[in-house]
Image (cartoon, rainbow, N blue to C red):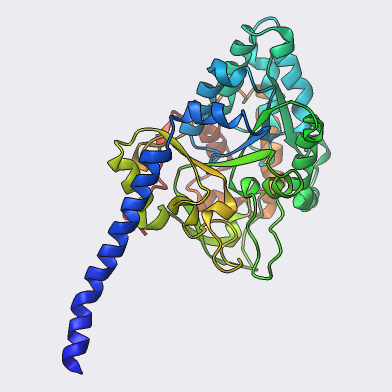
Length: 401
């Protein structure tokens, strides 16, 4: 008996290594046989689908937005799409977006209210979004009036001048319970409920891009991507931009501090690599070349689901339940966070910003400042309004999980 146990002890690691090596070969084979250069991948998908949904994984990620600019500049893509739908811009910003694109010269000052009136209250500080709008403006100058790309803001409106107390803001956060349906309706109506030949791309992130993750009771987690997939089958295609993945360990019912639109303060989570790093290993073996691949019927798609809903999911949920395709742009170690702009912090907005911070944090402001290493509100604001260049993605796990 002891001899048998000892032999199993010796054999088990070898079997695990062999199985992992086989999976790695399967991943590599998918990349080599079905992979396409990402821009060509997108262009080909637009032949078959009316709406491509892009999950940037992190709104602050830089490389996805560099890629969005590439596809907007590509004639095979910009000749097919009519709309770029952007999640983080409230529909209250649409008049300013329209004015910016109708203006004879590129004037970023027109966009100030768009970036100042985000859900957080601090201002949407990411250079990537501004650069994308600039790129679309430039491309539109080369297109005929009928072919110009239109940017559509799809998020629920927020009116900061109507929010006078923290309770007002908390009520606004409660209204976001219908956020995904709201975005779905704005997009589907703009595309004439997919009854026309109109096409577009929807730039969002993980919570809104899933196409069919189910709860343990078998019901869907209904979000924008799921509404599209269930109610307009074969019209949309959801794409994950490869980055670190969010692994949820637990959710706390009682938390200290203030709630946010993201809700991550309630969760115990970590950022991990997919399938113990085998996805990354396969991309590396392929020369780390950018590549787009479908997920249907292959080992990538069959990978166990990792993401926002993993604490309560049906058995055997996979990444194909979440997405239709995957785009790899660069190794995780080479990815960056966006630069943070400073031009939105005009004198008048700085005054408004102070009001919002006091509103958001109230009598817990001192704790908030202390926890984040600031000795005063002035110190915090001085740092907040500074321009910050791109930074390496510090969320990348040092070791595979």
